[in-house]
Length: 173
Picture 1 (cartoon, one colour):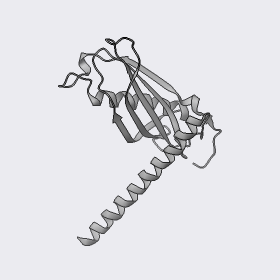
Picture 2 (cartoon, rainbow, N blue to C red):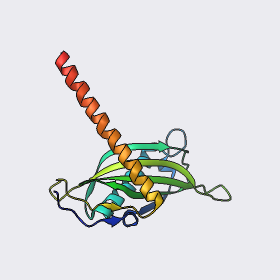
Picture 3 (cartoon, rainbow, N blue to C red):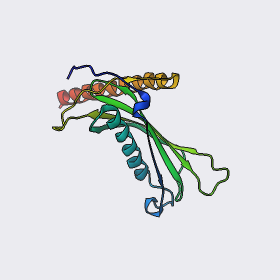
Picture 4 (cartoon, one colour):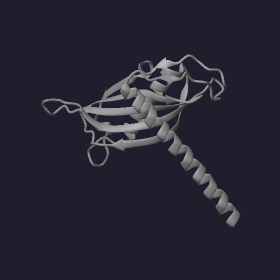
């Protein structure tokens, strides 16, 4: 799995999904359920990862999801995704979710959520496969790439700290 593939520009991975939120999407408070938005985020991120990697990519982690504003029935919601960073088989995908309020004029889109997800490209047997490097195209893409590296370092450090703590706990038992 050490074959280097030709890189793909960030724009190659950009995907947008849109849908109108309906009454079946609401929670007990009358706003759209967070789980509905999480699935929407995972769907758009998965499409972005699959487009970039050229095949199947599976969700490995949701690194962060922040709900900024509630989403209401009737809102036209758009989820924008792109690959921010790639490893040998993994990819970080950034997602921004905005809503167009149907009952507000002027109808300026409102950011309602942001998220970062990690995907792993897999072959038909479910084993990790190489992905092309992402090639940032703008200053914004470069910033996203750098910040993705920071999030990756934090994920790896947290995993190592938890493994150390578990090992110490097993020794004490």
